[in-house]
Length: 336
Image (cartoon, rainbow, N blue to C red; front, side, top):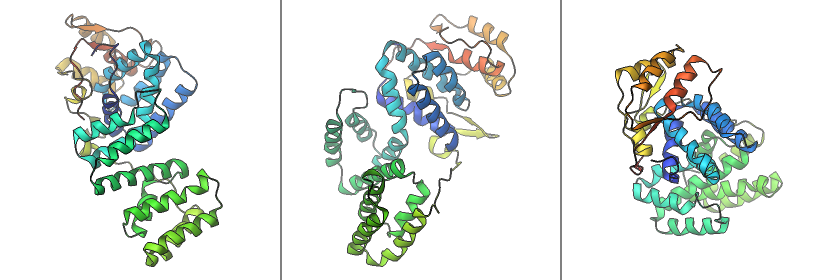
């Protein structure tokens, strides 16, 4: 992919999904916060890249892809906004992808979101999304609406996935009732509705459909109001879902991950593995890196856009490896 060719939102999602599965949950949140903070201050792209590359230490074969995306952002200013939108949507996209269980349907869902169309209004996006949902079977549509409701409740009230799961079980796994309760619960934040009024509305909704669940729901709401529930990070490594492997706490992707994201074949050799191993142990191997880079065929270009002077030897190795730009003109293999 040429540096000026704009990757699709699907390809961007594949990058962020792969990265998220290589990080502990807390580290993923740190990555997102770092990204947001630099977007907010309009940080220069070299600084932007330099500060985020360390998060790829467990997914080093994604680093050239990340650099390539930053190269696109240099030529296409709006692309960084699209990347940010996709990044913030990645957790929700992962859940929807798992529910749809169809590459075609998920691709259509991503298109419906119009994340690469900065001129699309909220009304247009919602209409496009509703048109997509109307084509789904009712059970699948309901499960996706549940994911939407959970995402909104998490954003507006800071509810963790474990807290949401408790609420779902309290309502005896009635998905529609659960969605209605979450929607009403948010009125305390979105419309500044008094808490007692919100509780009264939820009581009416629950008693109308499952009156035997109200006692437990009432207790849940009291605990929620008193701050009994709080965010707990789940440090699962995600390797089972992603297909990667862990070795002594370190994550390794399958060799085809770069191809999944960008359609580029990656063939590791012994020298390359030695350099990556040295990086993980903080050993300076700049001389061997330079020697190896000078022996690369002419189809591989070296980018010098990022200045890493003053960086640690290990980071310098990672940056040198990341500066490789593969001259493969094939379109992205959009599957992840």
